[in-house]
Image: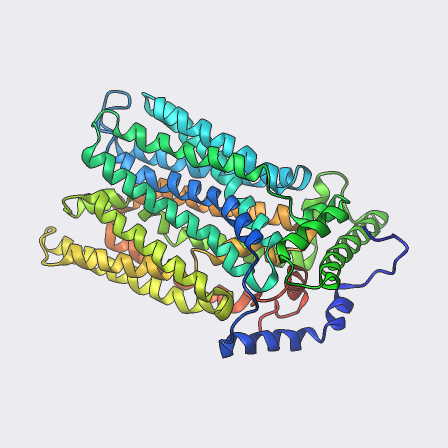
Length: 517
C-alpha cells in the first residue's frame, strides 16, 4: 500500500486526470454505437477464474430449476399423501426465504473473510442441502433441505458476481459477469434434462431423490477448484495486502499490459480506499458516523451516491423477480401439465433452452450495446410475451380449455417472454457491484441481492394463489404491468456503466441527473 504521506487525489481529480468525465462517457457511448471491436480477449487466467466461480451459478440454476420436475414426481412420497398447493408453495418459497435472510449477512462475511471464502462456505451448504433433500420422507424435512440450499444460493448469488466483477478488466466485465448467468441458465437446462430423464425412465419411488441429490456433485468440484484461486485485488487492497493485489492484477492481465498499467490499476484502487478511509475519519470527527458494524450501513444510507446506487440496484433486482420469471422456473411443469401437454417436463425443457440460448446472445452484445440500452430494448418483448400469454389463457378459458392452438400460443408467448428476459433483466441486475463505491460494495450488493430473493419469495409463494384467485389471464397481465412500471424507472434513473472502471462507474451517481445522459 502506498505511504500515508502521499497526496490524496479526489474522485473528481482522478476523472479529470484521464479527461473530462462527460467526454469519457461520450467517447464510450460512441464506441458502443459504432459497434467497434472491444479490446483484446480476456486472458486464460480470467476465464479459469470465471469458470471456477461460475460453478456456483450452475448450482444456483440447478437447484432452482430441479424443483419444477420434483414437484410433479413426488406423488405421495412425502408424509404419505399427495401434495396440496400450500405444500408446493412452502417447498418452493423456503429456498427464496433463506436466500433472502442470508444475503445481507454474507456481505458482512465477504468484507471480513474475503469473497473467495464465502464461495467455499456456500459449497458446503449446497452439499448438505442436497443430502437432506435426497434422504427426506416428510414435507417439513424437505422444507429444511430446501432452506439449507436457499442459504447456499443466497450467499453464492451475491458473492460470485461481486468476485468476477472485482477481478474482470473493465472492457470485459459485462461479458464475464454474464458468464455467471450463463452457468445459471445452463444449470436450469441440466435440471430439466435430469428431471425428464428420471421422471420418464427412473423408478417412481426414487427418481425425485436422484434429482435433488445430484445437486451436491458440482459443489464438491468447485470446492477443489476454488481453493487454488486468488482473492480479488480490491479486497486485498482493502485489507492492506497491496503486493498480493498487484500479483493478481498481473495474472488477470496475462502479460497483455505494461507494468505501468498494472501499477496504475492498483494505484487507482488504493486511492479509492484511502479516500474512503479519510472521509470516514472525517465523519467520525464530526460525529456524523456510527461506530463498528453500523458504520457501513450509515455510509450506505446517508451518502448520496451510495443511496442512489442502492436504489438502482434494488430496483433492478426486485424487477428481475417481480416480473414473474421464476414462477415459470418453479411451476412450468405444473403449468404445462394443466394445459394438457403429454410430457410437461419435456415442454419445460424448451423454456429452459430458450433462456440459455438468449443468455448466450446477451454474452455477445452486453459490452457492445451497454446495460441501459439492452434493458430498454428487451423489456418491451417481455411485455408483449406476457400479454400474448394472457390472451392465450383467455382463449383456453372461453372454450373450456379446448380453443384450437391456445396451448401452443401460450408456449410461444412464454418463449418470447423468456427470450426478452434472458437478454436483459436476466443478467444486467447481477452487474450491481459496479454501481457501488468499494467501501460499501459488498454491503450494497448484499442488500440488493436480498431484495431479489425477497421478491423471489413473494413470487414463489403467491403464484399458484394468484392463478387460483385471479385466473391466468389477469395474473400474466399483472406481471406485464410491473414490467411497464420498471421500464419507466429504468429510463429515468439507470445510467450506462459499460466500459468504465468500477471506480469511475461508482462516481456517475454524484451527478444531479443520476449519471443518465
